[in-house]
Image: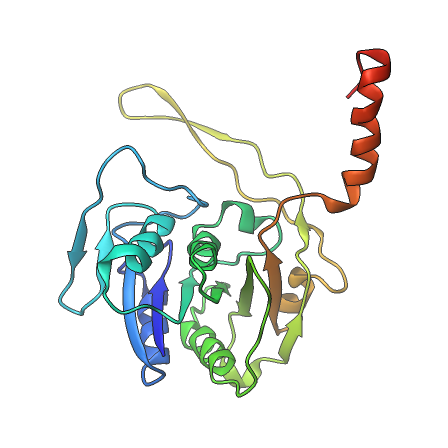
Length: 256
């Protein structure tokens, strides 16, 4: 088995190193990750300049681009042998609920899925103890399963691991994505040259964080495993939207 590892925290992230160490022996591991932190990059792809790839003494490769760039290059040009799957992480912080819209960690996994490879995004729900080895062991446990998992097209697993020692985990839960409340406001500041700048505010708390959600699972000490389908079509709205569009021909205008 050939496994491509990537992330959005950068090639020197301790989570990426822990993932590599934790998966040794499962097969051939290759690491291609951004040369710096690209948290929040989502699925952005660099199209306005060429990309530089650098190989480091530990064998990891870095790209001066986004997580999506890294997986795209790795699968479509850097290596002669094909990969069997992509694992992205271990992200330094949680990717729960709406976080996945912005997450470069999830984006690296979805790029692998777009290119036809099974993919997992894994994040540590960090409380300051940095139990990356637990998250790495969770991924290994999933990959070593004797029962192959078929999620179907355009689907990945989004895994969030409580920041606990392995023996303190309560188990695994299959979850749905929760939702966060509105993010905090932008934080103004003044730079040394006297110009006004802004920090993006912190993410909101879990607004929909009850039974069945990824928020609740990790709060109760369980590994959250969410199947994520990369199809943004609102299928249950198709019929009512079709009726609305057909009505446009009758009145010539409609309210939105």
